[in-house]
Figure 1 (cartoon, rainbow, N blue to C red):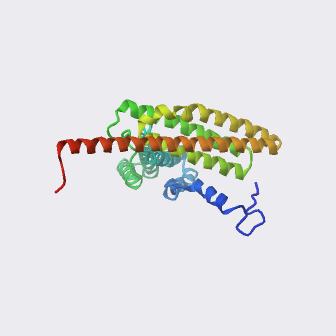
Figure 2 (cartoon, one colour):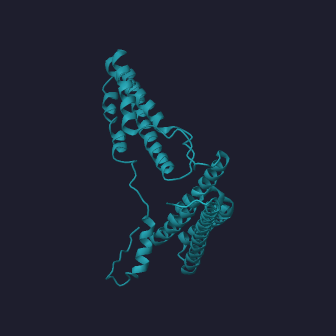
Figure 3 (cartoon, rainbow, N blue to C red):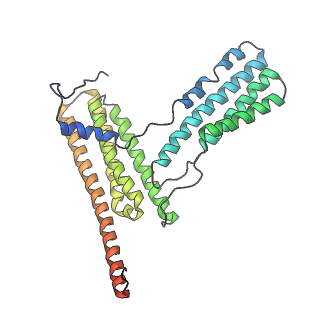
Length: 295
């Protein structure tokens, strides 16, 4: 869909404040590593197609199987990098359920070994190709996270509760983002992305102190579920027939949600600061009673 762009001197350029607010969508954004070298993995095995159709039936089958294994390795590697980036971006996270990058190393080794066997017919070359491919893939892309990540001093039960709640909340945000694309309105997509950024601020605050989960549970479950359902319903209506009133109501809902999420985040941060002030005050009183003074 065509998009109308505006700037500072355009008739509908908007205020400086609104432009600054829109830039908040990209706050904390990082360039993904799931590109570049990973995309080359999808291209590198394509010459096997030529080898498949210039040999006999056995060579055809082995080359096509090798091609499939290497393309599978590329896909597993990309998905593994995406999962690792999500893992690294959070304070509390569970390790990926499936070690995709290591499975990619195994798949690319098998693919290279099979392609080598189709080309040479012996065993030495395929084994060397397979081992070299697995080692080089592991060196290039690393291995998957192998343990859960939590906050020191927090038991695993609390860590698991927070990780599960944040995983569910992130899924709600992904569903919202996917649904609003069906409306075909770039401005609304940016508006939803801005709300998602505000919601993720709350997620990170809860991850910093899992004790906040009880106070934020409704926001991570009930409110996000309602926001997801409202977004899906709005996108269906707006896609059939653009309705300015429905759009205004939906944007007002996002404003209310964003304000409430931001207020809850601020409240949790203030509570944490109050706890710190109390601990400092208690420690100072104890030092005074002990008669400890700096020289």
